[in-house]
Every structure is written in C-alpha cells, then in structure tokens.
Image 1 (tube, helix red, strand yellow):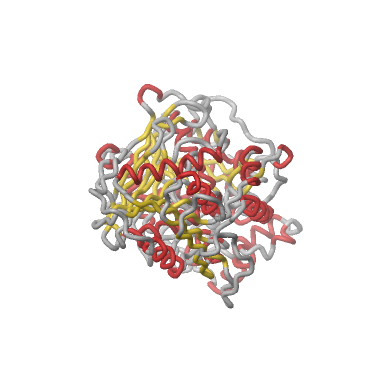
Image 2 (spheres, helix red, strand yellow; image 1 turned 120 degrees about the vertical axis):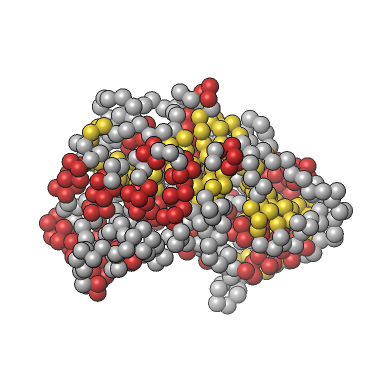
Length: 618
C-alpha cells in the first residue's frame, strides 16, 4: 500500500451510524488538522469541540472522541480539531500571536462546518477550551448553544494549576519564568502567551452569547456539592459533574469519561429549536497538506489507514524539491561501529497519548526528520488515539493486546520490502513495545526513551517483568522459553515493587553499586540487559536514553554488562540527569532530543555533540 492509496479512504465507521473522516481545513498556508464526524442522517446541527491545552488538551481530545460519537449518533455533524501550533495542525507553540491564532482556529472550524452544510452551530469547550469557546461565541454572534465542560473561566486559573503540576514533575528550575514565560508539563509558553492567558476572561456573562448555556461544574465525587460555582448567565443550566478528577486530575492512562457528562452535553445541544434542514452535509476533504518543518524545509503530511485492523496514522514525507532541508547532520559512532542512515521512522504511542506524542514532540520530530529525508509514520495502536477501539468506549489502555501485531503493520506500511530501513521510536510503553517488536520485525534500529521496565524475555515467559504491568501483552510472539531459569515470584515482586515504586530512592545514593546490582538481579527473572542484547543480536542498532529515575533499574551497577552489549553490535545508552520520565521538563527534553537527532540523522563521520552532563556508554 502506498501513502497515496492509504490516504484516499472513505472514513471510519463509528458506532451509532456515522463516519469519521480526517481532513485539513482553514488557511492554505497554515492548515488545521481535524476529524469530522458525519452522521448517516444529519439534522443540520453542527458542533465544534474546543479542547484545552497541555495535559488537559490531551485528556480533552480523548474525551471528545466519545462525545463526538454520541453527538453524531443523534444527527449532529461534529468537528474535532487542533488549534494552530498544536496537535497535528501547522505551526509551533512558540510562534507569535497565539491567542489570536487559537480564536481564529475556532472561527475557521465554525466556517468549515457551515460550508459543509450545517445550518446551526454549537460550541463545546473543555477546561481552558471553554474560555476559548465563550470568546469565540461572542465574536461569531450566531451560536445556538454553549456547553462548558469543567471550565476554567479565567486563564489565570489554568496557569496556576499548570504551575502546580510542573512543580510535581520538575527536576530543574523553570528557566522561562525569569523572562515572563511559563513552563507547563510538556510545553513552554512564552511571555506573550503567558500574559494573554493571564488576561483571558472566559466567564459566560458577556454580550452576544446564546440563550442556551450548559455549565458542568466540578463537584465533590461523594457529596455532589459544588465548591466554586462558575460565573455564567442566571438562566444557565448548571450540572454538578463528578468526573473532573477522573478525566483531568489523573495521568491520561488512567483517565476515563463519565457517561453522565456526555449525556448532559448531548441533551443540551438537542434542547435547542430544530434547525433548518440541510440540503446535504458534504464536507470538502483535504487529505494532505504541505507544512513548514521546524528548523527549515517543508514536508507533506497525510492521514493513513493501514493493517488488517484499520489502524490510524499520519505519514510525513519530504517534499521532493525540498528533501535536503532540515538540521545539520552528523554521525554518532559507538564501540560497535557507525550507525546506519535510516530512511524511515515509526513513532509509537507513549502510554495512552495519541500519535502526537508527549508534548507534541512526535509531530515536531517527524517533520524535522522528514525534511532531512526520513519518511515518518506517527501511528496509533489499537484502542489509542484515532485507531479502532479494542475495549470499552471511554477507557484507555497503554498496553493493548494487539500492540505487537500493530507495530508489525506499521513497519510493513513504511518498508514492506526492507524493514531494515526502519527505526522504531518509543517512550515508556512505546519503548517496551519497540524492544519486543524489533527482533521479529527485523527493523534496522530502535531508539527508546525511559523504558519503565525492560521485558525479561522477548517471548514473555510467565513471571517475566512484563507480567507485572497491568494489561501487558503475553504470549504474543512465541512460546515460553523453558530454558529460562525461574526466580521466586513472590520475592521478586516484593523487592521489585520497592525499587519501582521509589521506596528505595531516599537511600539509593548510599547503596553501593554492587549491592544495587545484586538487588536488581534478584528482582528480575533475567538480567535487564538481556532484552537489549536480543535487539542488538537481531542486527538492529539500539539507542537508549534514560533519566535518573530509570537509570538505577537498568544501568546502575551494570556498566560492564552494557559495554558488553556495545561490543556485540551498534549500541549506545545515554543518561540525561535532567530528563523526567514523562518528557514534561523542557531542559531534559532538549538534551534527549540532541541524542535522538544525532542517532537517527547521523550521516558523516565526526565528533558527536553531547549535552553537558549527559553520560553516554557505547
């Protein structure tokens, strides 16, 4: 299947009788990425879903898939989309004029639905997206209803909450605050954006708002009491929602959508007077877009559906006349020899994050690498992002049972004749899946970030570390290796839980490396480096980038074993002192990306650039 063939698809059938189609829309020079849900029997209502930003943006995009399906089942045409400079849309978060661009993005989404045939427009906003929706409704003046889902009525509330979250994740001081900017988990907001958000008033009390306003307020999960009523019209419909913490107050892999919230939003939209019937809902679908790449050059992107399960991905390729753009290239050399030049890269989901990756880094990396000549695919595993659900609606899984088959389908899509052209890239669970999939798929390279645990054997023998991860795939690749010595499961699980839950962290620096090595050995069914050796022995190049929380479980006390891996093939492992597990902190993220860029884009012999403080073996 070629990219062109895969991109020309009729859309994915959704429960309830609708079709979801991916498209770009809006300005030709800065197209916006969206997913339009077209019902089989449209009634003229069009609904624009306005997400939040940052971690809340990831959670609201997840929730909006369930909401869009429910709305479309009642006859509404629904548009989910990414603001300018976010998600899969064009641009960068660091571009100037962000607030105006985000409100213009909502205006473009409204215009797109009207052009597609919708005769009545409704806006739904989640968290900070609720404040954006209020301002957009005032600007438009012809919105039929507003639904504000656990809203931040002021941008300053959002900033305070995000700063508190960052303090939870931070390893180093926030370098942006001195200049008036704000670092939030996964993203850096410059001084202009910070000031605009601080001044944002999204209270639904101004002129030009619709008569129908729903406010789902955050209520106590036990009592249903609302501690802080949100400002709004006197006649606004107010509902005490009990799902805010389950959706926005937990990590995305544990997030879930409360069905009652969805029912309230659907009922509010349906409560408006029936709109004039549409002549037809006929959206114009733009299946590809030419986009500027970070650092220079241009790329072309298109959505693709591939594999037996109809998996979703976004393929990024060089524009033929601009394929030599991008960042300077150099080569990483290791004990095992030079790293090959990869021609394709497959980006795997990090936990339950969809294909844009942590802090949108998969988007920016794939565009930069594609401008340098590497064909990239950002894919969603089954049950994640836009790929078909494999479990109950509104529930996410970081380790779907189909993951290894899904990775194989992505490799085949990129390089059906020569998988050695492909490098796999993954963070956390994505790293786990990359290590498992590399030998059987025969890819040419693996670049992984912060694997929380390494599988003790690639065949997932009973009692291996993979079994300790809820939902981890078991028995997918091969039968258990009976030659693998079995460690005592109770002892291993107890000691492993002490290490993995951080119980030993306060005293870890006082534990000698050899004693730590012994504890590591007792808490694994086999050595942690066994999985690394299997990948290198399969002929794949391997780059491992770790933060200080992951290093003890994999590298501490094992430098001699890691050097042995490097002697077996092309291998390097880097410890970045400022790198946090989730890729949330900017300083560590930048240093890790330097290592990844040189590993994948290296083309000429020479001295590699190592960020200060980064320790590399191999």
